[in-house]
Length: 268
Image 1 (cartoon, helix red, strand yellow):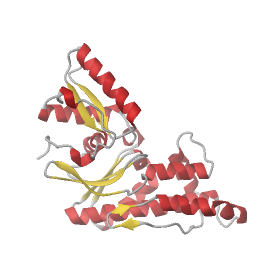
Image 2: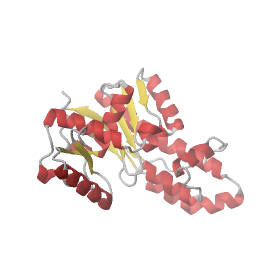
Image 3: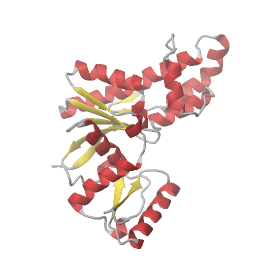
Image 4: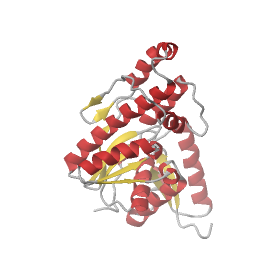
């Protein structure tokens, strides 16, 4: 532990039990070895990791994962949320869609949907729900669940067609709200972070929009898109260097830890 300068851990958002375990372990290690401790917002970990890896300066951020769907831009020392899901996250939508089709979880439901979608030939009409700069995905699942067996029995649409259709619809929704945020902030950069950001089709569609706006798309591969400890270390170190350690009484966990709750003291 002599080479460790500071203990960084995820304060939230997330599920209560894992967050509690992480907070307890981090506090214990910090006390045992007399190390400072920093509580990090999970989303900000993704953003700062993405900025570091890609070299993007001030991007509009699309954060897409199993638990979160947000369009974010930096302003006045906060990562401001311009749009988000009003029900379930896009990753949750993909996972539940995969279960409806009885797809394997190996290596992941989203990856298997992506591979099947490449073989899709026909577009199935699915609900497209954008409300201002927010999106909704639960209606898509209900729509598919009600019609799935009939589609498959009649062979009107194959599983490949449905995977293709789902990706085209939900990704188009995400690109629409990202473009609106770009227009609002006069941004010429987009950064995609979070596990769903690994999807090649999402990156292709976003890149088309960016080229039309003379903007630059930044994205990372699966090593850095998915959750990892390094992103917490990167954000934690930035936070520690600019603002010092987290006060002990604040080293807790918060399940609904909003991205814009955090003061970004390391940026002007």
